[in-house]
Amino acid sequence: MARLRAFNRATETTIRLFLMLAVATTLLIGSMPALYPLRAIAHENHDRTPDVRMPLMLSPELSHGQKTFNANCASCHGKQLEGSKKGPSLIPYDRVHHPDGAFATAMKSGVKQHHWAFGDMPPVAKLTDHDIQAIINYVREVQDFNTDNEIDR
Image (cartoon, rainbow, N blue to C red):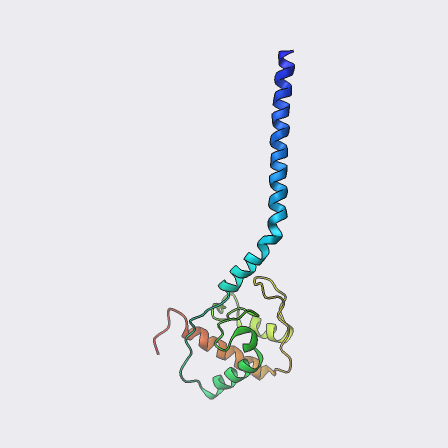
């Protein structure tokens, strides 16, 4: 009889612990959608580069890239590539992880949302291959101007 009471107490304790764990898990999973806006805010803040330095003088080719960028890209990525509420900063997009071909493909075909909270990037209409290369060259110039290992100009 004593063994039966001890078994019943152990079983009751195990069931209580299991129920508490189930309730805690349900509450945690139920609160996950509420955390999504926090993730979006974190990405938005991470994807902005507020103190962008701009080159003082640009070659004619880079000036064409700047004008084309401003007309087609700046509404989302900012006039100084600093990012906005619609798109990430382009300053931290280095050549290793985001080579020129990735930029060209993004402009030609668009990009599905993957590591940002801004939604899909649509393709940029009516850009020639020359325009795309000019934009890439301009973006790379501003990126280089804002890296820590550049020579002060």
